[in-house]
Length: 402
Ligand SMILES: [Zn+2]
Image 1 (cartoon, rainbow, N blue to C red):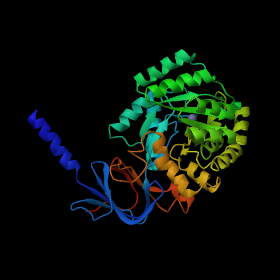
Image 2 (cartoon, protein in one colour):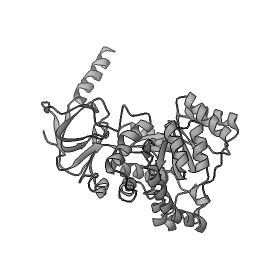
Image 3 (cartoon, protein in one colour):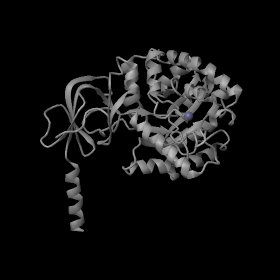
Image 4 (cartoon, protein in one colour):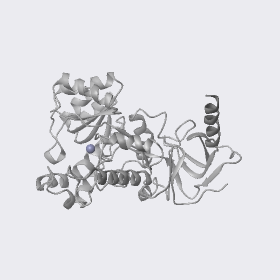
């Protein structure tokens, strides 16, 4: 036992060799821009910001770039992919082929600077989440709802039971569908009693709830039920945005990637389920609708707008496009958009004390962009350095030197 403990101590000391990131422009994720400072990383965490470099540190020179906390996508269907035939993958796909496509989604997401994603969700997310957490395979930190709940899942008692079951199965949160798809018009599908049961039970178990809700009516019902976040919300009214702000309900608009990606990849989806002419017609109209809704949403100053893309097959690794559209077309203040994709999204995941900002004690999830996304939105797509939990996964800029 003694020698085993000694071994652990020796490993801990070896891992303690500090890393220093030299920066010229550092966005801390909470609204501050620091200039010409260093970030000291020890044991996977940020030890301090500023001061002088400790002796023996591995140094990365990130001064040509803009440094930010790792970006967070609170709504990414990491498992959705195109199969070997370049079609939206279905049940007939061999599982081994599916696994590699999904692993590729994880790699390109991380390389784009997204160090954490939330998947709402599939049962197979759990194995992917746990595999990445083992620390060998590159990928973002993953939170998953596992299988979502819908109006057809059962009555309020059954929904409470299913929430408990998800927790037992290892879900990090609960995903609920309270309205139809935008391809079907987005009307409310769940009753207030069903939403009260699902979100109420989750809350009592310490689980967050994110609710797919397009219509104002469905977003209102989810807000009144105390659910954590509203997803999409294409048709939410100003009155309901006010209600959400008052209740502290997060709003996850998805205006920059999901619909555009469907339209760009129409042949790969077309003919499957509601990916038909009518569905695509709704989605084509949807691009302008969700942009206008977003422009209204940002006028509600107290509304907590978080960052989610609803990335599906074909969209992974382009999660930054949401930022570009929000700032360029939605006219969101760039610093507010940066706060949204870092610290505010972290807060919405109940991880605000671990990720989403660059400060002592936080996980060392740090990315660098070639260019400053606050001044040039396209720089958001140019992640050149990605560190997650103190480990460097991408370094297209300057090499490490002692
Ligand atoms: Zn989704």
